[in-house]
Length: 144
Length: 178
Image (cartoon, rainbow over all chains, first blue to last red):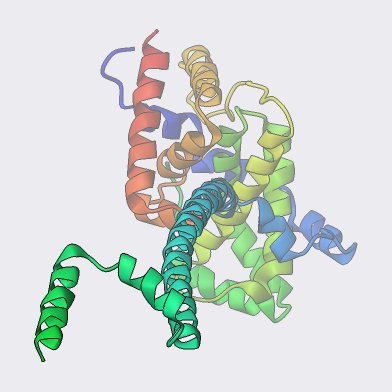
């Protein structure tokens, strides 16, 4: 067969008139209806519809993918958040410990102000520039 | 294809009457659409006339039962085809398709042998393509439905139906030329 019109051939092979010639009497339909056929509901009958089935399959497949990607994204964000939190906590602890040390030092100095040994020890920690400043003051005082 | 076909709006009116329990309306619809539904099912089922006849009856029984669910929008014929198509696909999903000669043509006798050979070849070719492709080409070729009407029946976008139709025709041409 060459250059055939496929659909024309199919239509000719199954003409409408063929169906009309073999049509069973309507009474058969009426009898089955009276017997209560069929039993399944409209929704159940179309539950396997191509459209709905494919849509369901699409939904099932893609929702799994979306869930998987979402789970991975959530884990990544959570991990990043945890790392950031640890980093910030570390910085906070360091600043907090520095502040705590400073406060402790101040308290110690206040408690020991006037203690000659403490003041001698403290002077040792003064820088050279500061020492020079005190030397000038001492020399001026000695002149007075 | 020959014979007068019922228009969509006329089918709507009958189905609405059927929803109210009017058996005379069901008989009118049955007389008007049985031939094309039977032919469509025949091509869907690879020429299995007995099963096509059973499913055609089941189609109209379900039209009666589900008529209250029908929303009249000028798509009565499409609605009946949707029921028939669902029955055919359910049957196809349950087992292999037996290919037999497609329903006998009303030939003048001189071409009966050639007609039978062509008919079987077409039945085998239809059985070789997917049920979805077979559904589209059967409705288009046998029942004379437009691709737009078919897209409504099968619940797929028009573009998808057009593509499926083109693929089916391409495969059938290849199968029938071998």
